[in-house]
Image (cartoon, rainbow, N blue to C red):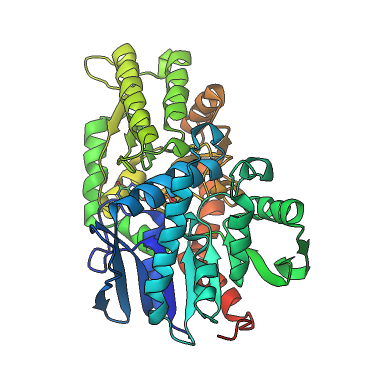
Length: 463
Ligand code: GDG
């Protein structure tokens, strides 16, 4: 098996494998690296006044991490700028929130060059290079320019937007063309892949061949669907651990017989939290007979706090939860428990297990791992119900969830009633249908699927 070089914006610390607010990407990639051995390269999260290119390396068994510090201007323009103020909103269909600044694009290009310069000497001839996500789209082209002939793959963890939205990005053609430096480009769903292919045909005059082949000019790459999974076995076990049982009992005791509805999301506008609160409020207003019998626990650890829109959404959610609680709470009942901090994974698993409903309603999401984790944590004999947005990539696989349009407060309210009144036999039938796929296509399957595709490409780039 070839060694693996994973390159992503941030790198998971080797000694911190559980707990904290770990993104889905981190959980998935650490599992892949432990399996194959290799290096994970990225930004340390730290800044230095002047960029030096010094690499800080740590080893643990067959896995090492290698990180570099960036300049404050890099962080402003590349990370908070182009990645999180331009590409993230644009790729989540939020043109209204997308900021177009030349400085952002310049900083993005500069940091991709800095990544390429520093990681280049760490790449041996036989290594597979796997680049992750929207922060690093042009990195493959920068590495080719530095003589890297290795097989290189790119995986996009977020949606690919419709062509008509993407063309609003001033440098869209140049950016998408750089993807043709890779050998394999992967997406979570057929929808995101189709949007990519549509762009390539309409904007780059590309042609499509068999088996996912896409040609632009003289370059042919393969574009594939590889839906990410979770560490299912580990999460199922975590949900039965003493920590999980403790968290579950804590929930039961504080709930005094009420049904728990749970949401767990990074505080991000793509997760549809305001719409979720509005849907829950609709449920409370339309079903007075059910008030006092349920409560919503929304766990939302803050993220990207340097970006204004993230501060705004936090303010809006504080106001909404305060208003809804003010309107509907009673002396012994609060309808929304809204918590702005993260919990260790095992505790989260216990909370999921205690919840009668998992409410996962992003407005747009590449995949959404929380949906899969909620299902994996359930008691097979008495599982809860997953309410899932049709706009999450996960909806393509989890067809036995109660699917909703997250923009519709009425649909969300109806779905909550459907879930609360669903007979146990139907809950078990739906759960069995979902857990089956979540077990089969777990994160190890995902890595294998992507890396097999990459490994089987002919090395078409002699250095
Ligand atoms: C991006 C894409 C795609 C959350 N709160 C806590 C906590 N989490 C964990 C969850 C889950 C992960 O973070 C979030 O993953 P998601 O997939 O839901 O969302 P993003 O962070 O936006 O991830 C997404 C993903 O990449 C992978 O490709 O699915 O579409 O946007 O694992 O459990 N973990 C802990 N405490 C928390 O409070 N320990």
